[in-house]
Image (tube, rainbow, N blue to C red; front, side, top):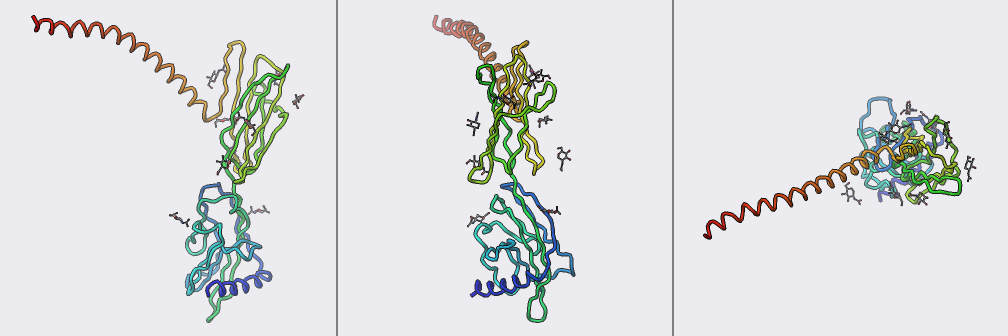
Length: 285
Ligand SMILES: *[C@@H]1O[C@H](CO)[C@@H](O)[C@H](O)[C@H]1NC(C)=O
Ligand SMILES: *[C@@H]1O[C@H](CO)[C@@H](O)[C@H](O)[C@H]1NC(C)=O
Ligand SMILES: *[C@@H]1O[C@H](CO)[C@@H](O)[C@H](O)[C@H]1NC(C)=O
Ligand SMILES: *[C@@H]1O[C@H](CO)[C@@H](O)[C@H](O)[C@H]1NC(C)=O
Ligand SMILES: *[C@@H]1O[C@H](CO)[C@@H](O)[C@H](O)[C@H]1NC(C)=O
Ligand SMILES: *[C@@H]1O[C@H](CO)[C@@H](O)[C@H](O)[C@H]1NC(C)=O
Ligand SMILES: *[C@@H]1O[C@H](CO)[C@@H](O)[C@H](O)[C@H]1NC(C)=O
Ligand SMILES: *[C@@H]1O[C@H](CO)[C@@H](O)[C@H](O)[C@H]1NC(C)=O
Ligand SMILES: *[C@@H]1O[C@H](CO)[C@@H](O)[C@H](O)[C@H]1NC(C)=O
């Protein structure tokens, strides 16, 4: 049967693996839920698909076949979490769809070349894949009073790997150390983060909370501004801010229009009634 002969073929490869050095093809950072193409960095003689076998597998996991191109043979069964997600591009490169944390790791692309009736080891490339996820824009809540102190919380979630959290006093751009930061790993591998800042109650505050995903080199921020002299408070994050302002302007606008309409309606109605009733009165007479 196909799986058995494949098993035998794989076994041959692994014995050779110990002997043949692998070439480092590259490191990739994929984003959870997106697609990625991992390049097999073979650059030898012109690639003829009828002359080569190509196999992608997980390094140090003999059991897991990711994808393969086997001329003169049916495609072998793939291991579970690669089913329906893979495709070979130009016979060599591996395209992965909708990647998740379970796809992070080291991959080998292994080439065998036909020599007479047999296939012999030809090339082995190593590819490393990290899977990151983008954090949601942080939200600052607070302050709640705690004696002489004020407590602020900055929350974000849905990202990976673990973020770095910074609090900044925007008045002088200094860093403030949070009094506690909790990072919880969810079942799907993403992290939720909640950071608490306790400061002495003051009348003027400009705070910023930054969530940084080092792997994606992506920073998201939220700000909280309270100014007692104008008695106005500003809490925003970089995505919700404009929509919140837009909503409040819209709501105020709608209320003003409704009041105007109401006044107009009452006036017009009495005018309208006067005109409408006149001809009826005329006709009747
Ligand atoms: C890939 O990552 C490994 C370990 O994470 C590192 O040692 C290596 O230098 C990286 N290679 C490249 C090409 O960035
Ligand atoms: C495989 O993917 C296709 C399209 O992406 C989908 O229609 C099909 O239901 C999937 N099959 C399985 C077994 O997940
Ligand atoms: C922020 O910086 C200003 C100016 O240096 C300082 O007066 C204020 O106390 C600082 N706020 C906090 C919470 O550290
Ligand atoms: C919060 O942290 C700051 C800075 O580390 C510290 O000065 C302050 O005493 C802490 N407050 C509480 C209530 O732990
Ligand atoms: C991961 O799990 C959390 C909590 O269960 C959920 O809110 C979030 O949408 C999930 N994220 C992804 C990318 O599946
Ligand atoms: C922030 O996260 C913490 C810990 O997950 C949670 O207890 C708290 O309710 C969250 N706050 C908000 C405003 O979502
Ligand atoms: C990270 O992003 C910043 C600004 O967005 C950029 O200046 C910097 O070069 C980036 N660093 C890396 C390693 O990509
Ligand atoms: C906060 O986010 C906004 C919008 O992405 C950006 O323009 C601004 O530079 C950020 N501020 C800091 C201090 O990173
Ligand atoms: C509140 O934020 C808006 C928009 O960023 C800004 O125009 C306004 O000056 C801020 N108000 C205060 C009191 O800082």
